[in-house]
Image (cartoon, rainbow, N blue to C red; front, side, top):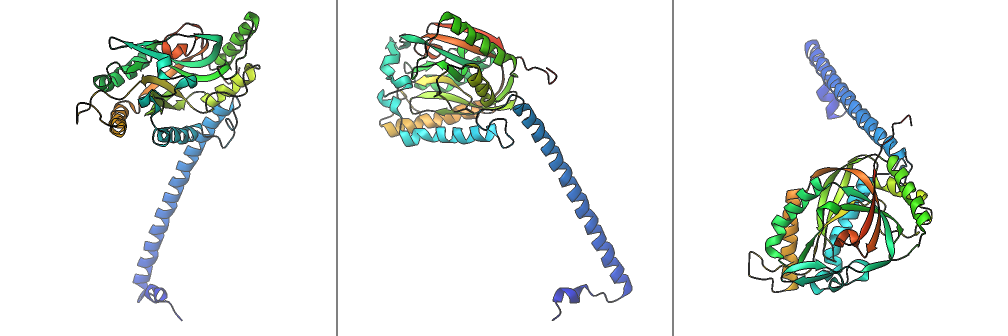
Length: 339
């Protein structure tokens, strides 16, 4: 049985047959050109990907970091998605003065006097020893001011803003509140030198603000992605090898890159729809609308990280609450491939 396609393709005279052949030839050439163009695009993308993997793999990796299949950006995005859902799944504990960082209640961390929020300083015994990436105050001020413009009209006396001089990305702890690791002065000096060496082997990070989200404990977090430089997972692995006595259990996901912008201590005092949010659900709904406004303003904001800090927090949450601390600052060195 002959197909109808075969019947249609049969020319009625020689001229029509040649025209059809020429048309088929033209279509074939176009397909070949498009295929070749696609191959070139794939090759360029693959070369860029291989180049990025080479940079990321130059220092090894934390868990999968540095391996061929590692994609820190994708892992971070998935992590931020989960963190963003926590407010709905776990509830807003801070609206009821509930438990917050380090199993402390908000009343343990702050007092309010004449409408002014004052942090409560409590000695850390022993001091926490942390390594953090520092965000320059030039960038931090822009982020803080944008957040204040949106939040201040609604949270008088119920919000604490991170000091712009101490915007930081927590990486790794040599000792923390869950597992204290006491150290002598000599041992701490060895840790300082080890962190300095890790900084010298790491490249500055060009970063972009992926999103701002609100946690169940009331912390307004900036969640970042890395455009260029040494991935945080790689720096964490280097620190794991360098700080040999550090707790096995660390506090943060290996790929996360986040910084605190503010801590909300209670429900909003007012909203555009009514003088005050009458229910917890309404308060949460309104607060989510404010977070969306902050994201519209700040999402896509770019910055550069150039310093790794080794910090001794003499007070609980000293970096967050302007407590007593000792800071050792080391520039990220980014050695050349020949080093």
